[in-house]
Length: 265
Image (spheres, rainbow, N blue to C red):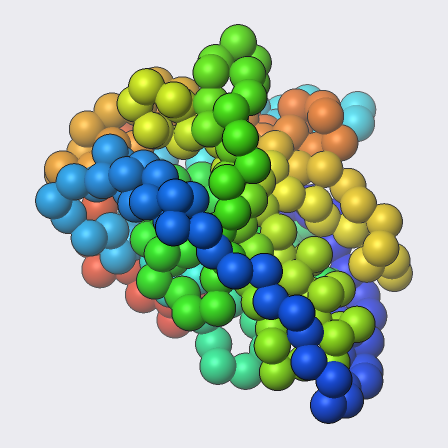
């Protein structure tokens, strides 16, 4: 499943120097709101992994296919999405939890494994699971959470938070670029604190500066093993519906391991 992928992987780390970044500090109010959201999603359970299964409607240009989907993720930043669309099978896997460089792969209609661009590996692997995303954000050092304000999104009154990673050991120009690449906008229902949407940017393989907007919308939250999971998930690319998922079953903390995620194994 190719969602604007990459070829020139390591160019983003081509230069480092001693200058320091000016960090964007989290605000106490923003952190408290995000903690309230995690409490709404998972009040008594620490979400370590999640598996979702259901039906998928995939639209990419002239391709309009339906089939099944399996989505797995961990709170450490690993995920895998497999779409079985009849004669076509598409897969995508991320591992952002390694101490080395993050990695990502995709398997397209050609049946070959391709690598994601490094500059597209700084947002969120488990975009389909608010519980995993919130757990990871609140447990990852160097993450900034800032309150943007109240906004209406698709008719829902939301609280808008901006989340990004800080790279204080990098040169100022590089640190600011990496912070921008990692930025995610979070929209929470003002009443329930459940996530309504995430938005972030991906980029063409050869241009980390050209933004392509991605939006994930969540609805139909249902209780699964003490965790509220969205049973309807929509993914938009460049403001156009790309993937419509209807979840039929979900499993929480079933022992999913990041080592199972690389494609072609």
